[in-house]
Image (cartoon, rainbow, N blue to C red; front, side, top):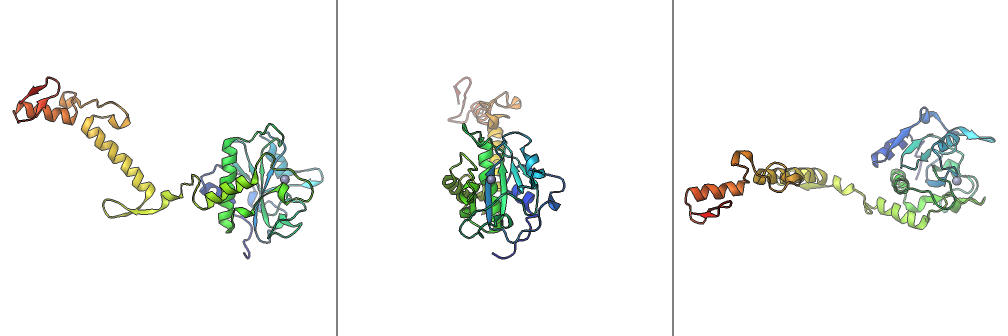
Length: 267
Ligand SMILES: [Zn+2]
């Protein structure tokens, strides 16, 4: 892989994946020295579960100075960016492709806010953001979901976190995100030729498709039709829709086949 440097891109990469991010003051200077190279993401739970769990991650605890992880993931799916440098989160352990007992210098740690005991308190928003965040980080460092690892899988010290998360299913979802599947919206950025022969993104095309179909519906049947109103008609056509007005005019002009839809008067 070679040198990746410190992940000064953490906040941008997460935001770029559509995730909510809080950048803690001084995060770009915080850490226990520089990364060697970044080979993966190590997933944890805080074993707290409250809104202040991040404080221990940032400041440390007796005998273990902070920062203890680069990222904290809140229950609502918001990422707190705590540190850019090496953090004390991995301890001793091993994983294929990672240096044994030295993961702190090679992995980004995510401390997800959770009690860590049943009944599991993970929220859907948090689990979704957990997978999306891991996918975004792995994409940035050029690694697959196989380098998204639970602390309990890596650790030789009996860690259990993140408890309540099936890591094989988790990695499947992360890989699906990396591959552009699983609800990923990357296809919106793909280019396509529009009606005018211009190259636009699928997202732009959908925007104008929605807008123009709505305008056409309103033109034909009255303002608000595109918003769900039932053909309200136009006041300047006697509260008739375009089609109704044509029928009335045709009937008055005695054009064969036309009729006033209100009176059923035929030409
Ligand atoms: Zn842990």
